[in-house]
Amino acid sequence: MDDFDRYRAEMNRVLLGSGHLGIKRFFALDTQAFEDGALDKRTKELMGLVGSIVLRCDDCVTYHIKQCADCGVTREQFMDAFNVALVVGGSITIPHLRRAVERLDQVLAG
Image (cartoon, rainbow, N blue to C red; front, side, top):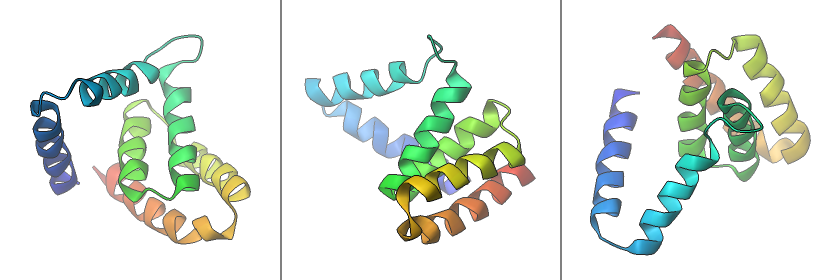
C-alpha cells in the first residue's frame, strides 16, 4: 500500500505540475465531487468504489477502498458494495473483486 500511495502522489504531482488548466480543473472537480454534500463522503466513496469495480480500474478500486476504510466502512459493508458491483458489472468484474478483497485485507490489517 505504501508503494501505491507514493507512486500516486508522485505522479499526481507531475501531472498537476504540468501547468495544464484542464488537468488541474478535472482534479479539482474530482476532489470536490467526493466532499460532503447532500450525500456524505462515506456514501460517495462507496459509490466511487462500485463504479471503479464496474469500470474495472484496479488503481481506482484501491484508492476508494482506502478512502472508504478511512470513513469507517466495515468489512460487511464492503462486501455489500462488492455484491452491488458484481450485479451491475457482471461476471467480468470477478477478477477485480478478487484483487479488491486482497487490497481490503491489506488495508484493514493496517
